[in-house]
Length: 385
Ligand SMILES: [Zn+2]
Image: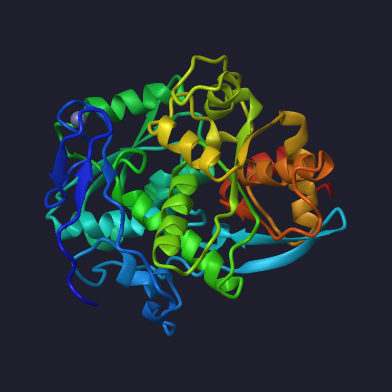
């Protein structure tokens, strides 16, 4: 791999640029930062013998080969019938820590190691915390994770098992973020929602779908969405393929949210490209219960630009989707099952046609929340469901 020029971050609020040559998570003005557009990818640059996202190393904004990898990426893309329609399911649930987060974490941690990061901390509803704690352990750096006290126990256990310092916080998801922000002076805030290199990692999802579909793009991609890192990664990846001349069109991107906590659905309905206040209620889809996303304008722009949209599914739609996925051999957590519920909706209302190529991204394994899945399906120890 050739050494790339030092990447730069740009602030969407004050316009300041920052060289990505030291650990940075926000601008001096307090805004988030975005990575400048990447160099792109042509198919001859793919390292075909590398069965991980590092097959696309040539297109990643890093100085050299990874210091730390757990074999993340190159997840299966399987075809199943959903209500009589052939659909592809992308099994991001089969990442090293059981969720899609490893794609972003691996690239973010390797960037941070390259620029000399020390101890880190992060806040998470569970999956990102587990991912970052795991990669921190693999990299030999100390890590503290702030989590909602009510997060599924399996996720908390997974974080603790990596040796990270787990700090459960009572209250809302936002309270957990506030606790992590307050600790920003103590160690580096390696937030997957703020640090721009996380999205540099999730863009490899676009490359993989393109390659696994025989160097073609699908018509539609459905993604469970909390902060929107997969939507932004997909947009970034397809943009690079388009600028490289590898594709001529882009897929429609559909962000799937739980109606009980749907920031993007609220903004979409208002027709604005910024955050609008909305009411929240508890949801079984804990991984996407995001009351205040960071890159609201960017995500909405990506969705509108792709001619896709936002689908907000009700709690009563999630369990049937979870059951249907399980019967197809796809054991996922409730958060991921929202995408199945959205697919049902979009097929029924004709937004997605049966002859189109559609990909449903399954973001997290059912093992992440096995107890909750059991409760949802009415499965009790010693009894069959
Ligand atoms: Zn700024």
